[in-house]
Amino acid sequence: MRAKVFKERSVKRIMTLKINRNFALLYGIMLGDGCLSSFNKRKYLVIAGSMADDKPFFENIIKPIISSLVNKNPPIIYRPSKGAIYLNFVNKALFDFIADFGFPVGKKGDRLFIPEILYKKNLVKYLVKGFFATDGSLVLTDNCGVLYPRVEANGVAIRLIKEIGAFLNSKDINCNVYEAKRIKQSGFVNRNTQYRLQINGRKNLNKFVKTIGFINPKQIEKLNRYYGCTES
Image: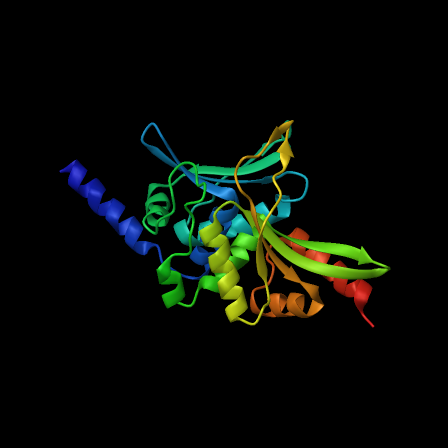
């Protein structure tokens, strides 16, 4: 009898989760810096960032998004020795809900893609917003005294990178996908092929901001500095 009651409660919790903007944002964040990990029959959601500049993003953006979905406040873990910040918490309902859309458990590798349901519900732009908040960056290059902007993102999941690129191009945000050079890490060459999605120039940046937008405070701060420096 107890097992039946527990199962019914578990199903009820899963049914309360909804495919909405916040879920699409979280899914995009997970595609970038998150993972699903199962250990000793416990199901963990993990999101990692940098202590140097991701604290506001974790405290003011990610935690409220998760709380809106599961009505719980996951603790933020700080690892100063590694310069890292984490959300690492157990939630079977949210874990299973995310995994059901094809999100891999364990190492993500190149197995990532945009779930079809997000196209149907017109929520892909929120996934893209979440992805760029983690694996994306705004790069400003000094070109003879004039700042030239690029929005770019890197990853090994070529299907995901191409899908995001196709979506952005469909919104008239011109972008290209390149195979990036392999980067040496701690004396070793990263053997995974890296791909870069790149959006060049102010015109495309303006379109990206209007259509997709940034939610990571460090990117918003950099964007505001750029606009402030280039106002005529």
